[in-house]
Image 1 (tube, rainbow, N blue to C red):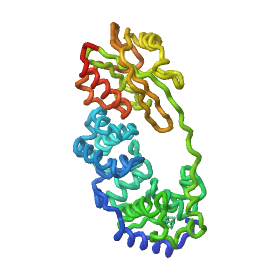
Image 2 (image 1 turned 90 degrees about the vertical axis):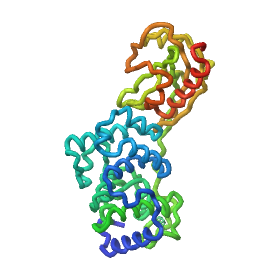
Image 3 (image 1 turned 30 degrees about the horizontal axis):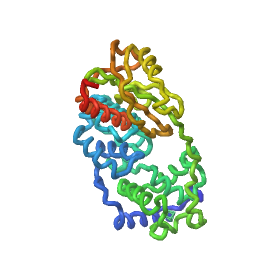
Image 4 (image 1 turned 180 degrees about the vertical axis):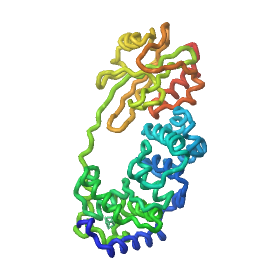
Length: 370
Ligand code: SF4
């Protein structure tokens, strides 16, 4: 079907059916009707690649800590990352803060209302801009996110990869054609809800209010669409995390911006050979590599391996507690001695927080006698 030529009658029937369905079956989300652009923006950034259920407590905590765009703009990046900790994709939290600074500093605290202007903010792409413009400002702005992309693809019987240039063009072309001038935010929410529930991973076509407009159903291709792009291959990464300890203090490094977990705190890492179990790791080699960073240490205690997946990397982290005998840090990244009691105040990735908690427990239990 060529959506550029779809009739006005088709569009108005489609909109009518979607609205009717939404008034009966729309999800009872805690933010339905929310029109504060700041709240809409933070929520939509959090919802990317995270479930509604997981987002609710994070959103509450975030808004309690940073209730206004001004409070976020003046916050320290470490404080923002600490509240974001556990959600992953930490560049989003850093971009939120940068965008808040831009809204306050360059826009004088006044929001722009069109999707085009909103897209000039760091970290705000076409979807987030369309969501803020339609939900908060009632602009007739289109949206395409994971749920609507799957739904539109089936409506169109789209056989292109949804992330390809042509796939995206077709999805956005349909989204722009169907978004109304009247209550566009409510209509967009209805589309998201339809995509999340009725046209989910397992589509419920019998309950679908727009089944008569669905090309995939007509062609008997529902099971095949959307066409899955070939999965990205996972790469295994093996590292030793060296927890350098001096009494009740641990040496924490700050991961550099642009690198894995940029801006978060953690532990110096050494590469290790694939499949090298802890018994096979040469302690002298670890100590000599740490000596290159200026610290003379002695490996004391090996902790259990931690496995964690970040994007397409499967991390195998082998932590070791190493006592500092002499020297001071001269490694390639910023580092600080932090008291075990203060670890909770620093932002960590989920994996390194697990390491920190184990070490904290051990140091409290055995103290300086280790
Ligand atoms: Fe999705 Fe089925 Fe509705 Fe088509 S008819 S839009 S496949 S739920």
